Image 1: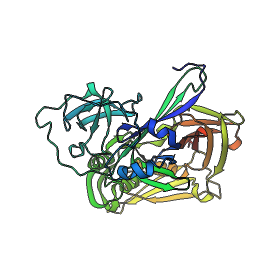
Image 2 (image 1 turned 90 degrees about the vertical axis):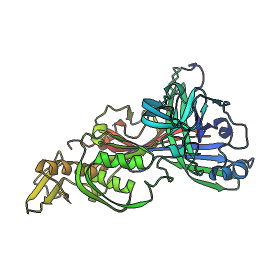
Image 3 (image 1 turned 60 degrees about the vertical axis):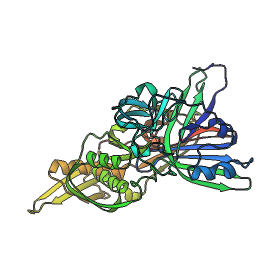
Image 4 (image 1 turned 135 degrees about the vertical axis):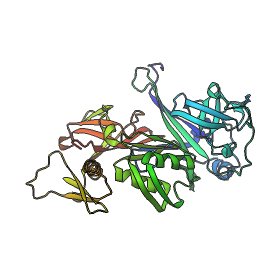
Length: 452
């Protein structure tokens, strides 16, 4: 809690490769933008700074890009690290241990379970850096997260100091936390942990000199994004494919969907892991999101049923700008039919229709899909999911509001007094921007589907 008499304000904490560089960056910061997407697209972080002192371009960025250094030649806001009793490379077994993006962040982005390794031998502010693969020990950019030092339990002392000689990687990590102080004039505080990102690109322009750092939630230093592969998956569930892909790329997987499709055989042909997995998810009516080095698979319909966190009423003064629109006419279907003919010639067919379906209407549009299914009920369920997938952007809206750290992709809001656009919407994208002009949040919404 803050003093309710102090002015409302927002600030940012920026972590570069595990080091808190907030005090060094903030005097130069023009804007920090965090984009949180509900599905398919990766989250990203963009930091824009002026370079009037010619520090960032000349003295730091060149080193940072080559991973030779993680700190600019200015005074950094860091505590002196002290050595702990665990050496770098010590194997740890974690059981639902809280993970943090820095040594100072109070908000945990999630919990870690499984075998990890101490990234170095240091304890900073009571926390340690860990990594998920032994060969990433000590490699810049390969810190999975921070954990509290008391949660670091070695698997055993045998071979604890054994790790491979590694070549430095340019996969540097960037994290950010947005904090709001006294946001409601009652002394309450709240934070938005944006998570960890990998450095994607650096742009420099001028005059005046401006540096733009862009980072992505889907690492380029792993094969999951760009390497095209050929593989046959036999007798696998979707969750098994996703988990194996995650582990092979140094990531973790969370499978939150109620149903787990099974495949007798499915082929990955000249396509990257993430594109192949995305196709499987779309065909199964399951949503895919990558955030904070975690692959998440979930059912959108379950998220749409959650209680809305905010009501936006026309003219209530809670927003700065708004926009409403409808989808193109050819993207709206009234029914979907899934058909499959077995090797014996048997036809399996399932149909799903919208809630207000009118059989006598002359404008009905039916989506035709051919997919391998084993029963009528399976065909009907798939038709329902695919109808939802194609119809979910029937009505959309966007709002720019004063900064609100509570607004995340996947949460729902209610619109009132907007005529035909009244109702419940899910946030498909939340863009949080903090800069010299203040803090605002832009949300893109789509209407929650009913009767699917």
